[in-house]
Amino acid sequence: MNKRMSVFYLGAAAALVLGLLGQPGAAVVSGEAPETFTALAADLSTTGNGGTGRIDITITRLSTPEEREQLRTVLVENGTEAVYTALQKMKSVGRIRVNDSLGWDLRYSREVKGNEGRRIVFATDRPIGTAEAVRQPRSIDYKFTVGELRLTGDKGQGSLTPAVKLGYDQGDQTLELENLASEPIRLLDVRVRK
Image (cartoon, rainbow, N blue to C red; front, side):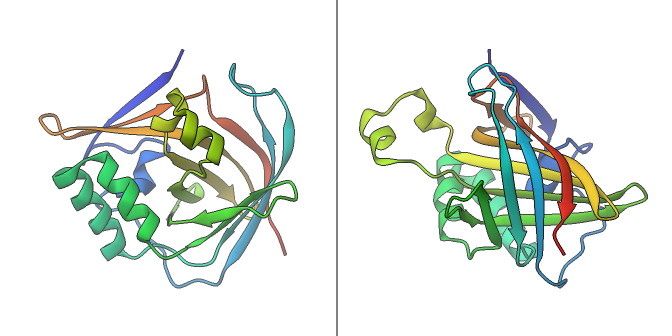
């Protein structure tokens, strides 16, 4: 069964959506040096292989307020397919890789600092292989990868949702993230690599 999460567009924060489009009043941090995080990824979903592996996430820069506004405007005016195209055209903000793979570019990142530590949200267009593109299975509609790191000092935890489908309700101004799997991949023992 798919997990569906909704949030009000300018409403209260939700774990993954806060960083994707922003929330007024949040402390946005930018201009800091690149950072690499490493974590143990545990896939406990019903569609995954139940395995674990190492994941490395490098954030080379944070998305600008102008880039965030561009994505918001594209979503509101042109819908989720247009967001996919716009995200593909954005400059890389970092890289994500699993185990010893080559990895792929991240296209959006945002950091929010608060009393309980830091929160980094990142998103990108999902890598789609040739077989998936030709066969067009249900997963082809889940074109985004969204993740979150929650850190206190140099340690923390997080989540990664590798196949996400975006939806937007113009009337309610509601953004919906639908996960293809039954739950996100858990990122355990997240550490800042020194």
